[in-house]
Length: 77
Image (cartoon, rainbow, N blue to C red; front, side):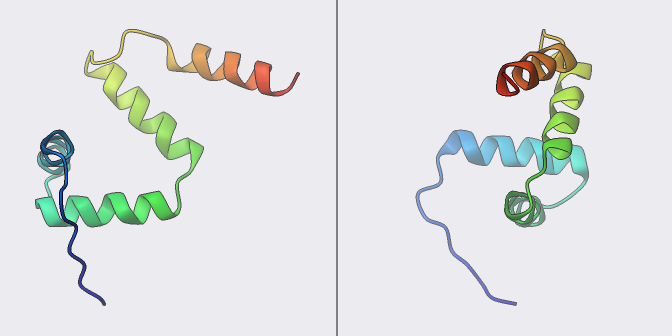
């Protein structure tokens, strides 16, 4: 395993990682590593899952399925 130092991380990004770490029961370092790993294998399913989670917490006020359906419809034209 290699070590990595990331400089100049915006405070907003750090705050969001801390929130996610708390929600997932992980340290900030573990959450950052999970985010990096997920970014390397980003899937639409993981993205949709995160959106649904945010919606269930009342942080989104739209139907994720409807938006994705509209995007798919537009893409398939």
